[in-house]
Image (cartoon, rainbow, N blue to C red; front, side, top):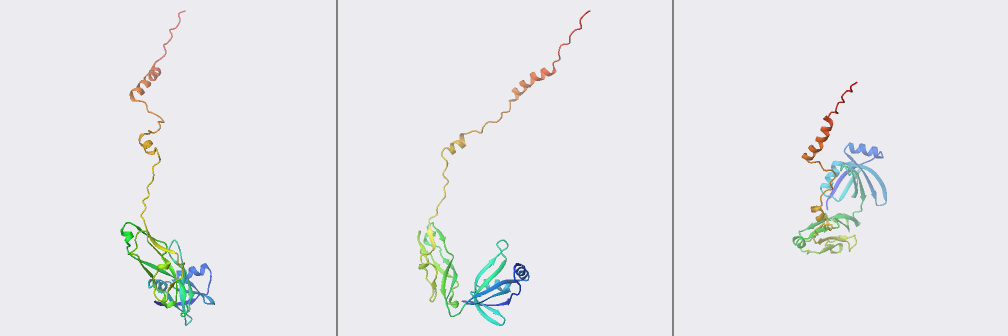
Length: 235
């Protein structure tokens, strides 16, 4: 298990305005709590914390005021839009006491069921384990290569290293191989026939060219015809 030393400074200000100012300066607001000690408001380097995450370090040795504090990352807050780191919570640990912590699941495959046309359906991508801080595994590997269609893996089926035990419900489903289901949209009875035979409703029909001319001729003649002039009466 990898440990990582991270320098942390005490945070003097408080509130969102102060936190925003820290982030603009490349610092990440943080808290350290747990083990019956007071909660400390801190800030750490964003760059150093990102490096910690890339190295998958689980035990963080926080260097505060010249002293070293063993801790684990308990929670990280992100901006959902920009993915900017907003805040991190550290939890103190006693190196000689077991702790419960989430560990990622790594699947090794493909399975026989997938090769036969099935689909791997993962229900849990992490599992909670109980162990000493220095025995926290980097990941729990599950070999599914011999898993047939309709096969499944539960928490009780996990094989872990000595000193590590599952803390989740033993019956919790982790993954399974299921059949591929094709979604077929059933046609509405009569819809196909209507679509091919039905004609759009006739709203208006343009007159034929000959009909239009014939209809227009009398009207034009009526317009052009002059009334007969009356002859003057003889006296």
